Amino acid sequence: MVSYLYVLSIGPVQDFIAAARRTRDLWFGSHLLSEISKAAARTVAEAGGGLIFPALKAGDNRLKSSLELDAFNVANIILAELPEDIKLKPADLNEKAKSAARDEWRRFAEEARDEARSAIRKEIWDDQVDDVVEFYAAWTPMNNTYKETRMRLMRLLAGRKSIRDFKPAKGCSGIPKSSLDGARESVLQKKVPGRLLVRMRLNQGEQLCAVGLTKRLGGGRVAFPSVTRVALDPWIRGIRGNRDDEANELLDEIGMLCEGENSFSTGTGKRLYQNFPFDGQIFYPSRLERAKKSLEGISADSDEENHFKGDLEKLKQIEEKVIRLQKRDKECLGFGEPNPYLAILMADGDRMGKTLSIIESKEKHQEFSGQLAKFAADARKIVEDEHRGRGCMVYSGGDDVLAFLPVDRCLEVARDLHDAFEKLLKDYPDQNEGGKTPTLSVGIAIGHSIEPLEDLLGYGRDAEKSAKAPDRNGLCVSLHTRSGGDPIIIREQWKPPGENGLDERLAEWVRMYQEDKFPDKAAYDLRQLAEDYRDWAGVSQELLSKEVILLLKRKRPGRGAAEISEEDIEKLMKDVNSHEDLRRRAEELVLARSIAEVKSQTGEAVKKEAAA
Image 1 (cartoon, rainbow, N blue to C red):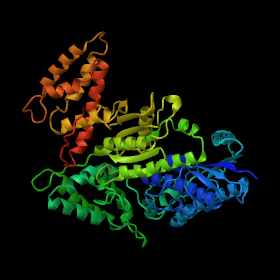
Image 2: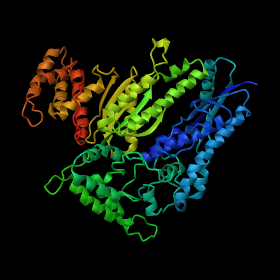
Image 3: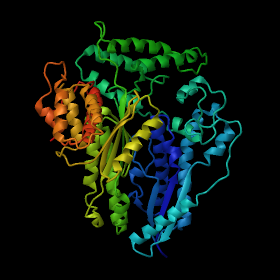
Image 4: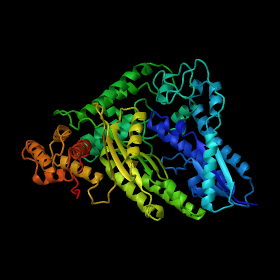
């Protein structure tokens, strides 16, 4: 007998993760794919296979099915050694693992179907539900070294994927497509009760296929924070940290009106944002008004099962309290409207393929997988820590991270993730590249919470892609405003702490804005000055410095009591030697101003640490 190396790839990633309109779709889709993969991995381990990726053993609690927000994530590729004494042949084990994965999918799908049974087209549902999960597998005897066998196995898998299965289309004439991605026909009836539309968070006329419906209703009532709630967090912290008892009482009263199932507010789960564990769109006047209008028809519905009859009255009560919190007159408390921007963080390990290619043994690969699993757990703690990140992790699987963060915490979280990754993988140098160890490139996109989720994710992917080019180990921060114009995109390789890297410079400019040391509009004037010198050949650093000093001396930071200091001008002009440098510095300042605006709502004291 002979042992085998086995790999199983599960998909499709697009259906489960990429197609999403709400953060709950995104999280549950990635969670669902992880649970399906976990079921396959669990089956392989229980049958006697030695899991290499993930590096877990049969009976490990992390392989158990879970609905928790912090459940262990299993990637959609399973790698295992099938020893000589295993009872099942590779082909039989492969079928058993695929069967377990399909059963896990059906369990979630049937749960969602039961929630919306009265509104489902059964024949379309039945056609789709058995035709969702895709599998690509390969195995090869361990006749050579582990390194050579793994390389052959991955070539076999790539070849198998290139001859993917093309199943006959099962389209239905006259049936609209899913609103999430337009790939499959809708499983919903023409007329769906208004209360069920609200439960699925759909507008009239929107459609869902079997996968979309499962992402909306699968997993029961497990909630996930919305992008609105993430953006809202600095404002909530500002009120909670304020000693104004009336403000906190008003916030508590609004929270009580948001409790239970309703049409205007979803929950955040049992762990995240417990200082106000609700969606929060009600704190944005324009959205609150839209929520009221959408309830006019539902509130009049006489259906006994209509749980939303009283929502309109609740919203009117909420509106009165929100006005008292936000308005700036003597009858109100003057906290203003919350800033609507949030940060989308995407991170990915660099040179991971090369690192894997030099691993010589199964044991070393398992050790490497264990370090990646530890990073995934540490990354969640960094992102969601109450005192540090205050964000929500969508997916953390090995070297791949997707998270939503409040704007005021995104730079610190990016730095912590990068340093944690490097520390955990410092023992895997590539001697062919001078002993370089794996690094983490991080992209941060700051965008408006009302933007379509698809666009926000696109901004995040673009930032991650820019962070990796051209020399990896990068940080890219981009700003996408609703006011129009091209986004600001700034990228730089990570520098060690204390060496005035991009994250440290941005933190310093933010601090200057918070301390009223830099005029609000000066950044835009500096950018225009850079444009004025664009076509001038041979502009000296001395000339640029004089022009910048003249411009800034005419400005008055804060309330205009004092001009900007020579020391601060020197900081701003450090390493600025051309109009390109000046434009980049101006854009750093514009970006920092956006972060400072959010920080100002938290009421937190200004940190005194400055960039070198």
